[in-house]
Length: 553
Ligand code: FBP
Image 1 (spheres, helix red, strand yellow):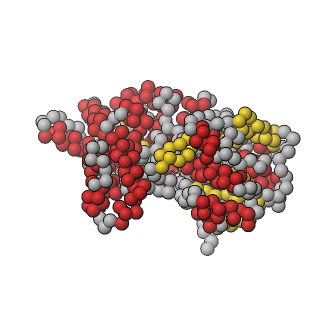
Image 2 (spheres, rainbow, N blue to C red):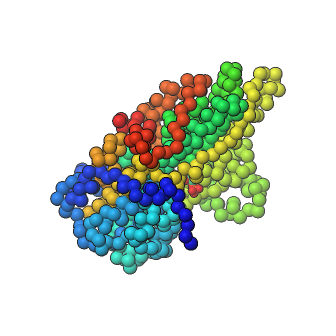
Image 3 (cartoon, helix red, strand yellow):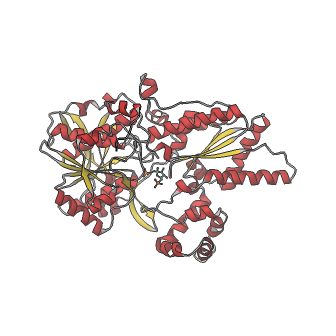
């Protein structure tokens, strides 16, 4: 089939992503830092990762170019949710391997970690790579949310790698997938298998970051896309002057996406889950807070506005979090049975016998709408609740309508309230990567190839100094074990990379908190417009406001 391609896609094929100077030089050396350790659970993690614990941080520097130059066979797999820039990670990896040795080969494992376990892959040739350069999506090799964890799965991977003669595997994923990278690296090292495992920090959620990893790729583009849409809605709201827009934004746990979009667009209300948790706010208190702003705006003659809410909110409301935790423990052993029950009422009935009668958690569960109750019964392979399916924006609208109805019944004055609900999530994950993400991802892939050439395993690749021009970026590797901590998942204690939540003492939140009262009542909306790929650098290359406030620049 001969499919058309858009003029932008055609133009983007020839965009040459920028690289840090040390990587461009072609004479790369690895500089080792001091040994590392995790912040908490040191002994537990050391016992679980005896072969990869304590490895030093590394930097990729311009030097004599003493990395391996022989032909390498390297695999790559995309894992978890799509994020703009994934194809550029693969392109960077490919170009770096070929630059070091034309005979090197890159294999793409298909449909996520399952493809690694089942040995399903295809060789990625120059022709394939060229038709995906600077494009969004993960469709070159697709993705999946499977986990490589059972002994037979680890063994299957090893067998496949040995049959392929694979020198390295690059796992592109978020916190869960990079944790998986650590588990696989440890297993292969213990078994004397030569395949090195390198992770790449990906997620639009922006929650895989720490001192070494400044941001996860995809966050920049997704936030810019959502901000464009929010800005357009703000303008629509102040034009029509009759609707309140309730917009839920993707981001499973942390509120980074919502905070960044708030900084970019100045909506009237932005809920930040981490603050709600810190203040211990109940659902009723959140509704009261929103109602107060709606009423004040109405009194000022503004029966319109824009609210943004992170999809992760439910898990940060203490009463709902406690309920979800108890439910997760029940599901750890009973999920299959509960799902096999014929209908919602039977499931509800059964659950009423399973919750601790003194915890109050069943009452909280029962107070939610049935469709949300059903979604809360599902878990992905990493034990996460599929929050992207919970329509929190509608729940808030319903609760506000109830509140205004009660107020009216008591004879109180109520505002005119015509709400509209939106969810911006999937539309932000396969966007053509912004110039920032195109450059960042290409650099991550290029650097990952150097870590494989250096024979390192159990590392997540990093590129730092991101608020500076790409020339001054510095690439390296962070040992995954230093990012681990122990958490409860599906009722069991397991090692996982700690998710970075919004820091309430950090500059991005402080800036938001200092301005939100003004944004609530006045119309201070900002309209970022669509992502620009060509034009002045301040329009096309600027990183997120979050990154600039966190890192300066
Ligand atoms: P990753 O953490 O795997 O990158 O995925 C993030 C995400 O986009 C979340 O924001 C969202 O809740 C989830 O994926 C949706 O998952 P799915 O694509 O399986 O519906």
